[in-house]
Amino acid sequence: MTATDTHRAIDAVWRIESPRLIAGLTRITGDVGLAEDLAQDALVAALEQWPQSGIPDNPGAWLMTTGKRRAIDAFRRNQRVDRKHEELGRELVERELTVPDVASALDDTIGEDLLRLVFIACHPVLSTDAQVALTLRLLGGLTTDEIARAYLVPEATIAQRIVRAKRTLSEKHIPFEVPRGKELETRLASVLAVIYLIFNEGYSATAGDDWLRPTLCDEALRLGRILAELAPKEPEVHGLVALMEIQASRAKARVGPSGEPILLFDQKRELWDHLLIHRGFAALDRAEKLDRAWGSYRFQAEIAACHARARTPEETDWTRMVELYSQFSAASGSPIVELNRAVAVSMASGPQAGLQIVDELRSEPALKGYHLLPSVRGDLLKKLGRFDEARLEFESAASMTRNTRERELLLERSRSCAALARGSSAE
Amino acid sequence: MRFLCLYKPSHAEGVPPTQEQMTAMGKLIAEDMKSGVLLATEGCLPSAKGARVRMTSGKFTVTDGPFAEAKELVGGFALIQAKSKAEAIEYVKRFLKVAGDGETEVRQVYEADDIPA
View 1: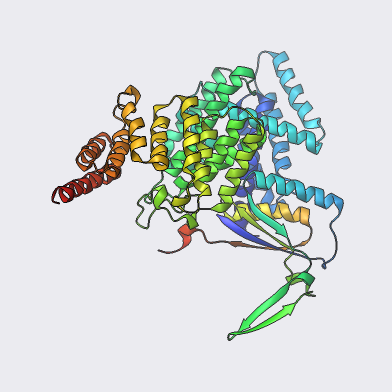
View 2: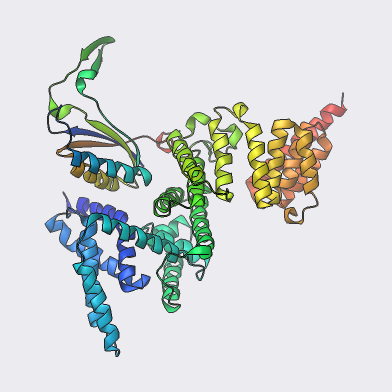
């Protein structure tokens, strides 16, 4: 193996092993920042020794042992006035070194530590930006540079964000633990939100962006899947994973040759990744077996799965779709979900039925300025042959969106309505 | 990135795996499947159940198994997802430690973005 090959191999090992390494060291030292530094020390040692000695049989264990030794050294060097504190710390660390590496016991500990790391990285005391950066760094093993390129911000910005985040966790003495009871629900919701944010960042990447951006989808999927193993009894985790697997399955079909977005119903379904769709269905099965009330991600995933089952747009099970949206709308009380229900109803029962629901939403304050409301209304009016009214709605929608491509599409539709209005009035 | 991994065991066909090997393999497959590293995998049945189909200048020759040359016989395949070739190789090494001596050919496979417009 050449020196470069070995370095690449060590990098690969690092990416695979670093989250567990950092998690274990955080439990020992009680501090995420210190744990990451110790983990980096272990990596440096690996880069120094492995080119000569070869990559060890169990690289994860080697790194952990090295990290732990560095932790002891750190405690010893620590110039604390409080000797008792120092001794306690050393005892703790030395005990860790002598615990026999019984495989299954180690697995459970590592799993629990990893889960604790997920929760601390997504702690509400940190801003969402900081949670995202810390999660990608500690759990994704991404370098500061990679995170910066993925988010199209300067490297220094991300570096500072991470430094400040670790300092905040340290200063506020945030405990390294898995939340319990009612707190678990809210804390888990923020973890899932962070993962989905990362996914959407990658999903929204366009052709001109850095090639790293779309890989954020893979990162989010990986984190979601790991979380599904660490917290298998949480149905919304499986719901989110299912949603991401199915959305990711459309990655190749969503973008045209010149980078233009292709809507769901215009996509070539043979380009959908059926391995991922299959995984999505499997995740939904796991959620189903837990037999709990459906959460938002479960609903969204079931809707995505309903689309995924149709080989062609014409084969879409609109009856089921209406049922899903009805339940989702009732459970969430969200006017946006209700708007989507209107679309499903129009597909199942005709544009007039959908229009009735949309008309009721026009007075909804939450949808004021929401361009999809007039956009959907415009669609339904156009289908009903009410071209002038449709044109006005599309123009209204175009004025509400800042996205240039979106606006162009809406203006295009308003122009086509104008032409149809002229055509029908000419008869 | 996705990689097709073709495993060719060093030992001759017909040597059944030990209980220990099967347990370890089962565990590895489950872990890698759940994490999304492993997208698909299967072991091959004995080559006696298979065949080789060759075409030369439009003419076909079909040779039924079993095939004798241990080194060239595919024992199983895996389709894995990894961030880089180096990462794929690392996963393959972990598989080989469980599967036993042999060679895995690792080939990156086409994904839609690789196909020139």
